[in-house]
Image (cartoon, rainbow, N blue to C red; front, side):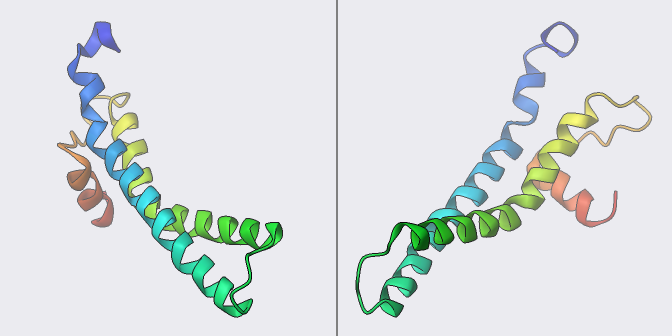
Length: 106
């Protein structure tokens, strides 16, 4: 990649990678706190046993995956775009451009 596209190729997917991490991580962290507080309240304020913490973690992981899936698929599209022939390239400018084209069916 470095030989063919120079240093710009490494920077091209950075915005999408950062967007994916931000959406996925923020969704997980925010959801975990809310969910564990609700489960603690349902347990009359008692600390959560391990299985309930694990269930909260699995649920929050699923929420994060759903929230981050659009950014994740845009990351894959941007990476795959570099391998396509010039006539089929979408030439994504950044993460939001990739998401916009993806939502419009391209």
